[in-house]
Picture 1 (tube, rainbow, N blue to C red):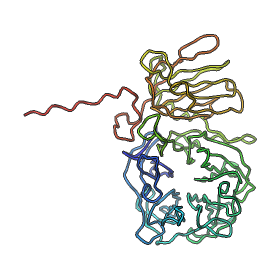
Picture 2: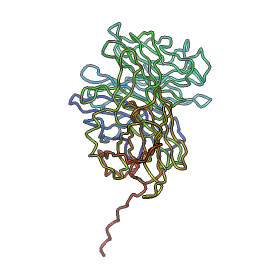
Picture 3: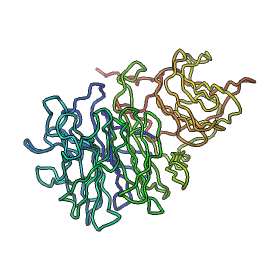
Picture 4: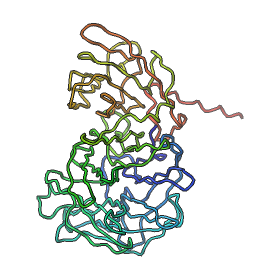
Length: 458
């Protein structure tokens, strides 16, 4: 239901599908820490495989930093593999070092593989294939040139690359933009002025291009300041691009789009954890969350909805406590739904979801709001998912809110309204790998039972 490599955290990632239909995720991996070191904490890509986008099996490290003196000698960041001939070409971010002011020096390189399973990469030399052009983008202090994403050009036989960059014409704090470049052969690129430069974004990371069924384009971009992602649409790659607003709530980041086993279009994204697995820990890079359905309809903004492919992982309805569960509730007025209590059977909430018209929020210990949002319209139904410490809320089936809470004991879900209180039936979630007990396992709640070691015989 969520994934991280043993003992490490997942950051930005890429998805591909092998010729045999197996899904592969390549991801940045690093330790659990709030103090991020640009040069030492993301020096390799982990790899994992799945048949259903829900249960992931770690397959070890697939790629690492380059040799001394190369453009990627210090770190390798976000990547994007694309089919090329009988194998794949992978564009990726390389970091060679730091500027005098301590900013990472970033550029984009290329590697090839004769395989389609995310392994067997060989670099295309020791230099990048595309760098920031100082005519339009910052190249020194406060520079950005990372997170490449490559698609076929819709006007030529070539390729288009989008990159997270910094618009040199704007103040640094609002200079986040999407740069773009074109190529005929994947190895020689021409950089162009910004494709999208909103003028109110600090960083526009992990841009993703998706061609829709009608031939138009969708662009997803992660916003550094809000830690969520937004969308833009255009009739062609060259625009004009129209901003369509947020697609995922704060806490969901670095989205990727692909076809699910049922053929539907889904989005996967990362979600954070907290250092030490406590409510007082700082947020850090975390895990890969489960898929959501991507819905794009003419005349309305794109949205993420519950993916029906997850239903196979849900058990029969029960009113018994469950740490990992999904529950649904109809709303006719203000409601407060307790999910966990401070002690078994106490009734004192330490995790609750509440809704009052357009206002939707989640409270943690002491009634402190740990997540909130304002809906476009009052919700008629809520779907709530909990997997360990991770909480998601869908309002009228649209992904609306997410947060983390490491406190409390599972309890029957209780909804309190102005009229009465009632128990909400839940469907327990079957975890793909419930026996993992390394640092990446799903938080097991407050009653983890440690296995006793067998006594040694003399």
